[in-house]
Amino acid sequence: MTEFVGEDATDSPQSTLRTLILGAGGQLGRELYRVFKGFGSVLGADRSLVDLAQPEQLRTYVRRVQPDVILNAAAYTAVDRAETEKQLARAVNAEAPRILAEEARRRNALLVHFSTDYVFDGAKPEPWVETDPTKPLNAYGVSKLAGEQAIQSVGGEYLIFRTSWVYGPYGHNFLLTMLRMARERDKLSIVDDQVGAPTTTMGLARATQIIVGGVLTGRFGAASDWAGVYHMTCGGSTSWFGFADAIFALAASQLDIRAPQLIPIAAKDHPTPAARPRNSILSNEKLGDRFGLQLSSWESGLDETIEVLRNQPAQ
Ligand SMILES: NC(=O)c1ccc[n+]([C@@H]2O[C@H](COP(=O)([O-])OP(=O)(O)OC[C@H]3O[C@@H](n4cnc5c(N)ncnc54)[C@H](OP(=O)(O)O)[C@@H]3O)[C@@H](O)[C@H]2O)c1
Image 1 (tube, protein in one colour):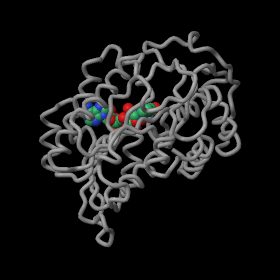
Image 2 (cartoon, protein in one colour):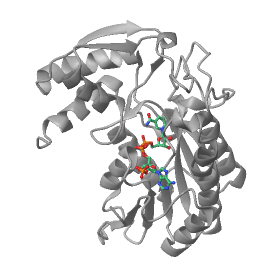
Image 3 (tube, protein in one colour):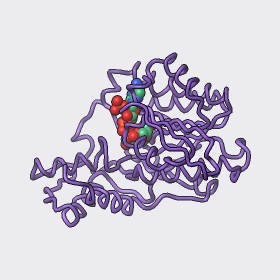
Image 4 (spheres, protein in one colour):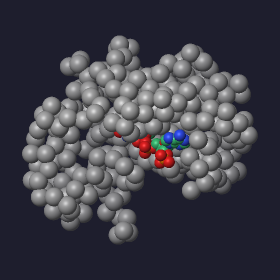
């Protein structure tokens, strides 16, 4: 993929808008591109067009495109590898967002950026709210938190959506890994003592589009009324084991995939280079109060995603 350009929707109120989607080849970026198509002129850029680890290349690219809206779905997301590639993770997850915020501010553009539950240490038993103290447990979380802070310190018109356990019909994610493993293994051991809300790329992209549309038409007031950090996840919660169990129940009936035997294990019995939070559940109350929307339950999100997979031509 290189640069791809959506058609101008000349009858839409946003027809003169230019929206730039960074990370358009990733699982969320790809879905954002699909949902925003027709929202004025939409450019999706992947790494072959602009490398977010090259600050001056990124700045020059944004100045050339002159976007009114920047959706940053690009990120260094290799959580375990980040432990040994801290500098690269920082460049992509913290330095690049700072440049995007500066360039957005320079031309009064809206910047939408995505962050993570990994900014928290997971020690609180209740759902995390936006004002809770951050304390990342791993290098990825540290780099993502630095990205949030960089955007906030530049200011301007920005939205930071913290989300969790992201998956969809494409890319690298837990759902697709489980479906692949089901073909290879009879038994799977899955962590049962980390909880969160599996969140679909489709739900995130649709909610983002509704909010961006509302912001641009002034429905949510001035930037001082809406700019900030919001949690945005599907509703409800489960453990990785519960998610896997739900995946295989549906996959058996909808995708004709034989469910492997699932064995619940503790995270301590599945050591990884990067530590992960025990409780990743984010409260979506602020999002609902401010923008009047909520994503579907994680179970409905899974139904929808499996339905998309069911209708995909066999690979
Ligand atoms: N996945 C999750 O469970 C999860 C959870 C919470 C929050 N989030 C956040 O949600 C957002 C979207 O994540 P995702 O799951 O869609 O991630 P993803 O599928 O890994 O996509 C990230 C994209 O960023 C691109 N990228 C990485 N380094 C780059 C660079 N130096 N220059 C240009 N592009 C680069 C990747 O390109 P390549 O494919 O070429 O590497 C990829 O297309 C991110 O901000 C992430 O931190 C994700």
